[in-house]
Structure formats: C-alpha cells, structure tokens
Length: 481
RNA sequence: GGCCCCAUCGUCUAGUGGUUAGGACACCGGCCUCUCACGUCGGUAACGCGGGUUCGACUCCCGCUGGGGUCACCA
Image 1 (cartoon, protein in one colour):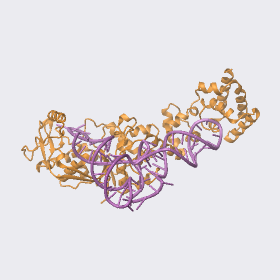
Image 2 (image 1 turned 45 degrees about the horizontal axis):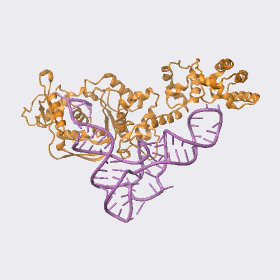
Image 3 (image 1 turned 90 degrees about the vertical axis):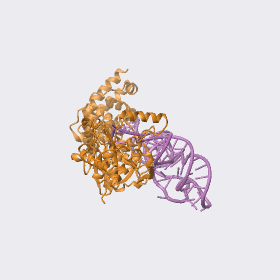
C-alpha cells in the first residue's frame, strides 16, 4: 500500500512554526516512502476562516518548498466544499443508532460544566439525550429551519480504545472516560473530529502525522472510523514545540509564523533544517539537505519528548547557509531587503556581489546584511561622534591626506593589492602601524569602528567615494583641534 | 481536578546492560588579526529521586517527583 499523509491547517491565522513542523514531518515521511502528501484546508469554522490566512498558508508552504501532491486549488480539498459527504456519513450513523440528536442548549451545557467543575467532577457531557427516542430518518440540524439541535456520537461505554502510536508507543484509553462528542453543530456544520475522520477515510490517508496535542482526540476518531465500518489509519504523534518558558509555542512567544522568519531574512533551508532537527535526529549530523532529510527521515529517529524552540541555533543554521550560498543567489535574494530598508537597489550585480562577499561572514540574516551594508548603499554616512572623537584627531589629518594622495595616484588599478601597497607606503613614511591608520580610515569611510577589512571596503567603495569621504574626514579631523 | 504523554549538559540530541556518557548551539579561554567577524585549538557543563531485576544499570520494571498536553456547538 502506498503511503499517503496529509497536512490539514485551518486558515484562521498565520502558518505557525510549530504547526508547520508537523506538516514537514508528514511531508518527509510521504516523500521518504515515495508516497503522496496531501494538503487539506480545514475551513469548517466559517467564522474564523479567512482568505488572507489561506493565501499566507499556501505562500508559506511554497516558500519553504513543501510541495503537495494533492490539494488546493482543487476545490475538493477544502472541507467547506465537502459538507454533502459529512452529512451523508452523519445520516448513516443516525440511521444505525450510532449517533443521536441532542437537545441540550449551549447555555445548559456551559452551566453543567461549571457546576461539575465546582464540585470537582469531570466536566464531560452527562449523556442526558443519549437514550431519547428519535426517528431513524431524522433530519440533520438546520437552525434556519428550526432544527436547533446537535448530533452526538454515541461512543461505547465499556471497553478500551488502544492507540498504537508509531512514535509514542501504546496508549490505552478507557472508553468510560470518553463522553459523547458533538459531530454536527446546530448550525448544520460538522465538527473537527468528525470531518477529519470522514476526510482521512475519503482521501485514503494511511498515516496521520500530527502534534501530540491531538493524542487525546485519537481514540474518539478511531471510534468514529469503526462506527463507520472503517479501519483507522496509523498514527504518529510528534512531540510538541515549546517556547523558552516551556509552554506550548504561541504568538505570545514572539515571532512564530513562517512569514515572520521569511521577512526577518531567514532562508527556507535553514528553517527546514532547524525544524527537522527539533525532535528528530540522524546520529550526530546537524546539517541536512532536503534530499538527505527525505532519504533519512523515519519515525524511529523521532524523539518522544517536547522540544524548546531555540532561536539561536536557527540563527546559526541560517548563518551556515549564508556562507554556503552562491554570491549570485545572495545578490538576487537581498534586493527586496535593500529596497525595504529604503535604499535604491544597485544596478551593477557584479558590484553587489563584491559588496556581499565582504559582509556575508558578518551577517546572520539578510536583514542584518543590509544593515551592515549601509555605508556601501548610501552616500550619506553618519559618523559616530564617539568614533570620530577617538580616531579623527588633528594629528591624523596629515596621514589621511597622504593616503588620499597615494590612492589617487593609483590610476586604474584599484585592486586590494594596490590599495594595500598604498597603505604600506604611508605606513613607512610616518613609521606607524597599520592599526593606527586603518581605524581612522575605517571611521572616515564607514562612519564607525567596525567593518570588513579596510582594503576590501576601499576596493568596493571605489576611488571616487573613498576620496570624497577621506577628504570630509580630513576636514573633520582638522576641525577637532 | 480526571485522562493522556514525557524525563541525558542551559538548549537540541547520540546512546538501545559493561563508554573517560559523544556531537551541535550558546557560553568561557588561546591562536589568527587593521576593527568586528570567519576560521582554528581547547575548556566549563547532563543521565531528577527512590526502590527493584542483574555479576553489572543512563539503558529494563515499579513508585515518586517534576514538566507538558487535553478535557468547546475551535481546529
């Protein structure tokens, strides 16, 4: 049997990083087994589902490269288009007495729940309507038509339901602990636990891969499968991703959406690599290409315990991919970030690549790269007053002037070698060390005391801009006296 | 609170009865050096506790403790 996994996000917000990791594992498992990866949109909650969220989810998945074999834009993969199927399944259960109408109101239920909580009893449904008589061909709820009831699944009262999880092992649930859950709401919309079962069955999903927060739902879903006369799929419940405080990762932990990382200048490879390595391992290997991930991935490599999201390690991985990338690719990728920072995009790609070459070992993200590139991208450099006070003193004016003259006389050869030789002549003439000249020059050219190697900076800046900034600095130095 | 899951350095993890408990991020120090980085070399740092089983437990079993998840007409 070919493996079929699915990822079923609901379009009620951004694509969350913990959530997408579950999808990634489902994707890797499918690819590893030459199976199919299905994308289904769980949009039964019409109140909260939005087109914007859907677009963001699809774009996020495309960005990280989790391509799906079946799914949008095919309308069959939207739950909102599948109500007929859910209705049919619910009627079947009703007909067979495996489900029943419940006339309790939401308010009643809420009151009972609170009451139970006060008395420290379990808050589940008490089964009030479970044994009420009803016609087997009863219609499904429809608020507009005055059929203001819900449909509940009649779950077995005795016995156990066993989940043999591919990651967690065996979990045994007492059926007596499981109350009768609502499968159709009074507005005629099926609930998650029901719709997901119908769809997993209809799409012939063989392995349900999801976060272990779904583990408590699993016995219920298995029961519905069986009530429908179907065999449940295999389950693999992944440990969750936690925030630094040890609780389930959520918005309040800061940047958690895929878009947030994309916009912060992270590479999809880094995010994938990081997420895959959180909760899964292959010996001591840390860096994985997509192909390796697919080749090595298996549930046996998955751990059982929750992992804490470590932003620093992600950053390190991003840095790794930054250094590994080709300059031409980086040049292409950095352009939108340059534009967003308010600079005009350099027209000369060769020059842009040279610029990036001097910065890539100093920036961990594309955003950082652009930030470091300010003095290359703008003619209006801001000289840090503290740096100027320390390095642009009257006595260096003469040395800077000498360097400017040397550089000017270089003619057409503005290579790093030629620049280094020019420095050498100035150093010799004044009998000073490189550091004594390099720092004032650095402040003059970049505005600060930290930058790539000074020869590189000069070579990238070019003769014109270098001399202009040098001369401005000379004036500043003289005025400091 | 009921139910379920989990437990090796701060973090991600390797380990499947006998290891000086390994790697990675972070951190600290040396080297390199025009600043900052990169790189490189080295270092600090872990088997939650208590019982068993066994010649021998990080590894197996039980209990405890701790952490997490879940208990909706959300998904």
